Length: 388
Image (cartoon, rainbow, N blue to C red; front, side, top):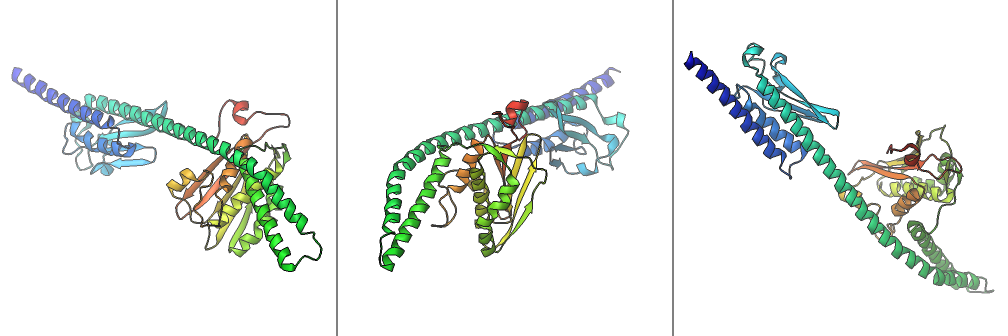
């Protein structure tokens, strides 16, 4: 009897040692800072079977968000041999972890599923949840730090742009004024008149760039009035529709008929529409389609422009709103268009988001707050939360 009891105690001790060794190995994996969530879960999936009573037969699976990971035969795991634990992150079930045996190895449940194994599984699920939460907090912190660095960089460039714009305005105004004055000279030779026209055109182009710089630097505050974005989209099409036709780009409108008016600067909203469409057309050198859509929610009025063009890499996405950053050829763009769009939307208390895949097109969405006349609050201030 004593010998049998000793054997049982020895077997139980060996099982506890296996479980402790497994949990220690998983804890080491979980503490590895260079692992992604997917890499960590893959390692855990392969480590878990070693802690079960029959490690050579056991198999494991982990489901977490969109990830589905399996050890060798886990897809054929018998339901009555499974032990499961939910992965709960901040009170939300994000997945589950399971260990069991395949269909071809299914003795009665009581003969091989141990309560200690279930407790280990519960601890591993808690460890995975803790690590996932820490990773998400770290990623959110890094994203916030990057946003702060970006905002600081934009503020510095904005101050520089504002100074340059002010310094250039006066001499540029003189050039434009004298060119227009000289153009009125009687009996001026045709060649000289043509040259003056080119000077005037170049000066107007330079003035347009300065105006964009002023908007980017937020030196021109929006003049708020009730604005119908659908109407602006339709009316501004005359500016760029010919460009779309020349480039072989089809234009599609998906406009919300019940779209409410917003408080905005009409001229600046027109500039947002035009800049986004022109940017989309330039992204489709071989032609394609651009879709302008509007929609509304409880807090926002959205304008989106989607193209079927070249798309953007992750590196370009990080810099697309930086002033003077452009992937276009020389004389194809100043790199200010999207910076101006970003500045205008931000000045209206709105937000801008981008979805793009390299080679699969881009969708840029500008969100303007639904504000009543006389209200200076943004949706997040009115409701106490953000729905972006």
